[in-house]
Image 1: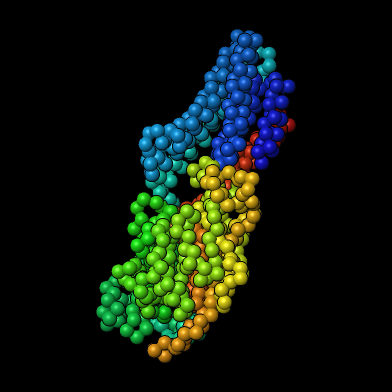
Image 2: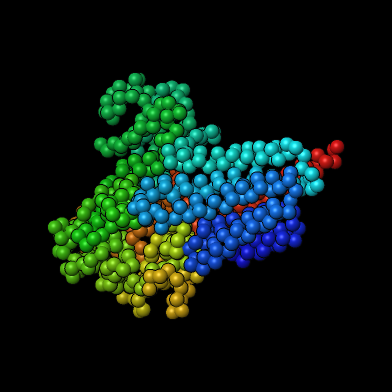
Length: 627
């Protein structure tokens, strides 16, 4: 891609120098494009500096060509050339403005978090405006000069400047508006609103109901909201085979039922089975209800799970510097959204530390135990209790972290070990800082064959899993007796384990496809539980090489990571029949991988302008023929 860009730049400069028509405009535009591509697309590569410097030099050469034309031009044309030079300098100043948005300047000013983001984006917007206000009028003035090669008519320069500035400022106005809209979260939805259909996971849940559940929808007769959700609940009722009874009721007409369910107004949806009652509010005004209706499937599934499956406990290991929902210093170790997802799947989240008995025995009511990237070593007694819990049929989610506690003994019981270094890739990563560190923000669409990754595999062209600072996972050969490991996710080709931490691929750092996540199972011989329920036949574990896979900033932007988390929990607890998607039409922040960033750059910088130019040329030719 870099050399394609260089070829285009060389061609533009050659045309500029040979034709002598544009007075350096093509060279200046080529220099700005080379500078912008180097800083925006190739900044993660230390070799991008020659391209940045080359872009600056081309801009300087372009301004020199313009100055040279001024010296040989006659008075009327000289004034126009001088005006074009001024606009060229304005365009060139965009490089300085962009430089003010750099991490170096922000660090010197001591900026952090939101203030840092606002500062940097503001300068980037100003740089973009400077490009538009400089380049477009300069090109329009050049066009006026080319149309009048001998004598520039009176007023032609003024009209060219007015036209160029009008177009530039009109386009530039979009940039600060877009920035303000993003900062202040302005949004307007002019699309026709339609309640989503039930997701495959919700459909699987209602098909598997063992006992009937009654659903009461409290709405006025003829309610727009009730009519909009009727097809959704009709489909659920049809799929449930008589085990889901749907009733539309008016709160004022059914005072006894309303009192029993503690519902005082219409707009609620209630689920009941015996004494178990769950409910949530949608609202009765369609405009206000749209936000809740966009996540209707998610809320229905959450409440059905509470009724049908009952509460279960998840224990989070604590006391060793683990990632947690209360983390304040490192966003990639904050697991608040992770906790919310657990609660949405009807898990009660509890701590498991020495005080709670982690060195003695995992509580009998533990549905899942989570080990979230401990920084310090676990006591031998804790490791022993965790392994004992696992081998009695336990379920465990283990996330390790490069440079932290390797969990050697615990992972060995699962037939695994953690490799060295942080995985990095030159192509498949998520740009964040536009620096070399981004190479560790690897993404993957390479999924194994397993219940955990069924939905991801089916949607691998749209979904990816983002794993910042991931460590490779390695299978122990031969594995412990009775243990089976299945690869869930592998890194994309060209990944290397960055052992020395420089984010550069050294001679000894081999490119390969590394294991990022595993599902592990093992046979057990456990007595039947005292309550008469069937004894587990195997233990289960999901192991990840990166605790930040389920951190707040990652779950906020990656639907693939959200799907991986939910399906991992379902498989661990034995609800793999519920694996599938949950429909949710809420807006999700758009993030592009490095490859997608390149596509967007070329689309907006080259493809769209060429389309606009082509339309303009055709219109001009057509107008000329009609005269």
